[in-house]
Image (cartoon, rainbow, N blue to C red; front, side):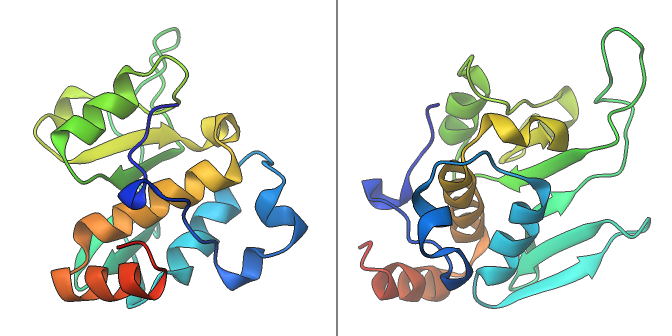
Length: 160
């Protein structure tokens, strides 16, 4: 899968995921999204109008669980997808790389034209490894954090 990596280096995992789990390449799960997002510094978790979690840094969301919307539907049944997760990305080029990759579970809809984010269905997270998901969450955080916070995080993880 083509994704932007933090400065082209492996991304460190939160302390909660050190050891065998961190390197086993296991498939990503929904609970990993929550744990990875909460592991980033200065994160606040708010609840949307229907109780869906929204993870933010400095008042800017970087990952959120979207409520079912008419723009993301099953092409066969017309049913709205109940499990869409939105991740911010650094640039339109990053977005296009993620959604254009045929092996990627990421997609977008016309509603998100011009919006620096990609969508993924929770049921398709297992198409990502835990490490890939960690990189996506960390890149989402970096795309929304202040320059000072992002630089401090990158420096602390020796990614500059």
